[in-house]
Length: 431
Image (cartoon, rainbow, N blue to C red; front, side, top):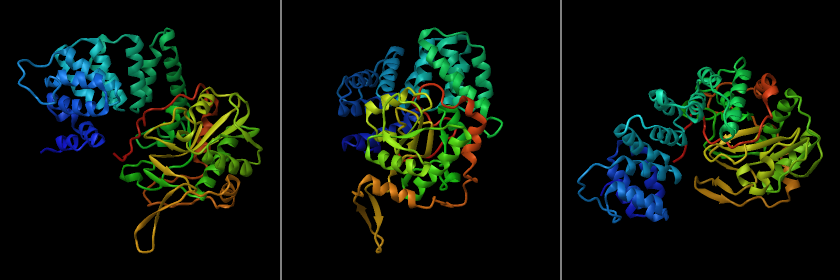
């Protein structure tokens, strides 16, 4: 029994989807659709199950049957569309490529293929598809998407050239156009002080989302991580270091928050109390729209949705700091300052894993002390000075402040839209 069928038979749908994502473009389309049908049936996704069954020719029974004709363009398109809607865009790509090959010159297929590739963070491939169909492209959305994906693939100069030629958008695309303009303005601002190459995580993180990244991971930089953490067991010294670097960024930007706004989740409250003490500011509960505040989050994915809604539209003079930003599941609101980028992170006071003297591993309980006592641990800690594995480029305390000193005129602008792509700097990730 082959591996993907075994995964399906055993009910390991996440494992099956990982396999299909990695192998979709090398698989027979009917077999890809048949396995997708099984995964969709197990997940209760009737729309995807039905379109996959049509493409596979199973008649809804999950077994391939003899087929008298090749799948039609509509069948391929319907399957691809359903895959995108259900969050498995990588599975849509081979079907949409086949549809476009069967019906070249169909702009709807070009757009849907570009959408699937963009959802899968394959921005350079989006550019290839759009360039190959340049004669079909309209200014909005097509050439805007070409500019956006050109920038996201790392070519700021060409992106600016394409964007400059765009006419004014209508109301539908006005917000997207303004966001692209902010991204290009940030690229212009930081270009004199940072490389904006394939390893410039801090520079590109600022260009894409307007976020100042305080620290690079000192582990695995040359082994595929490029400054991002995979698994992080946080420490008090790491939190202290983030607040000290935050202080330097605020000074470089001449930002003068009057108070620290405490978000209601426990981890954010702990970090907010420590930041208030270290920065010499009063602390008070967060109120949406209140100007002149430093809102402090430990991990925005732990913040309630109604609080996030109050942070999306920035208040005058407000700065949003998040200590641990998840880059594989980005928060719905993008912070103005991020301490570090992780895939999985455990707060110093959270439940975690600890090695016993005999080499075995045990699970630790969360620290149940009052938030004020744990915040005091951060205040007392020495800033973390992890030398790492020696393969990470220098990351001095002043590096984030130097970036924002060059770009403060275009920082803290626009709404805090979610950043859904890692951009030009790629990192390895857990499956």
